Length: 190
Image (cartoon, rainbow, N blue to C red; front, side):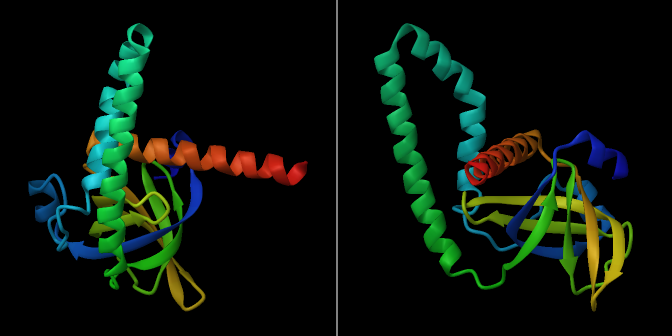
């Protein structure tokens, strides 16, 4: 994980997180955690954003030749995303099991303060919700670091078997968060 810390950009962010301990066999046999009861809406925005990533280059090509068609398609995309956000935001209001944590996040993993003493090498099923974007992700991870701090633990985890679409979404989220922070710093310095 130390090497990953150097390979990936990292941000500090507040995220709703839920985790469950899972045996290695479940992680090996499954591409995405199934340990959480989630509705079809939970991953909807993630799937739509992954589609945006996959189709962005096509939309740019259309925009070069037919700007009106491109503008119309962008409006349709905005409508779909607003509907999805509405569905997800209503659902998240009813979710009391997620606790907000300040995390240090990269494409390779995250660290967070925790009440539980999680053993090194333990596999986790993770449910992450980024409140401002309403992005929801289900991922597997393994505990790489566990340090005792002020009546709790600082846990460092590395994502395991992360689908490329999730990695792309996280990378974009991290870059956008860094850009917002830089802009905020510029505004403060003025």
